[in-house]
Image (cartoon, rainbow over all chains, first blue to last red; front, side, top):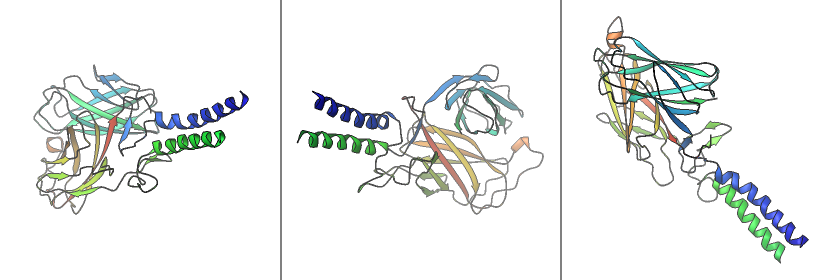
Length: 133
Length: 163
């Protein structure tokens, strides 16, 4: 009986080493994977507490030659973090928006978008972010 | 005999654990040995391609991932206030992915190129590079006079809440 218990314990220890590696979403295919989330902005603000995600802005049809600042409330963000941001069209199909600044703060970030054309946006944008410590 | 059997089973489990950490990093299968997370820094394969007429291809082949890379554009003469659009074909990319892009000069020495939209789709991504401020600037920017280097990083959204 004791011998069986000893063997079982040994096998469990081995499993204990195995399972975390199997459960962790490491890039077995060379891709980087993160648990991202999505949120929709209202009045230039959104809340998403994931380390990466996609924010759909409100419709930005009035943005002409000026900047849109998305304030992202995110508890994972610290002022010393490196926040990568990227944008793409959501429902908008016109205009040339670019990200000009990304400002990390404690628990929040500001992502500033500028429109570089006279052609205005005609819908939403999607702003993607990844927070690196 | 039984102890030996249990030992073999335990070793097999540990070997499974080591293999599960990263496919292709050990034994005779080491294609991804330079990829993955090492001391918190993602070290990616050095994938490169050269664009022709605004298009380039970097497809994953076998176990060689192309989740990042640097595309050298063709020699550009993009006017100030105009766009260069690169369509990158990459079979790893899905429309829901997060793709981040950077731009740097290759042989180009003029203008003010900056990344605009980065629009992923199934099997490709469109990266728009804007030369200069357009109507937002006070003076027209110079025309580009050479190649650009466009870097990208692909992030997959995971459903496993592992970060």
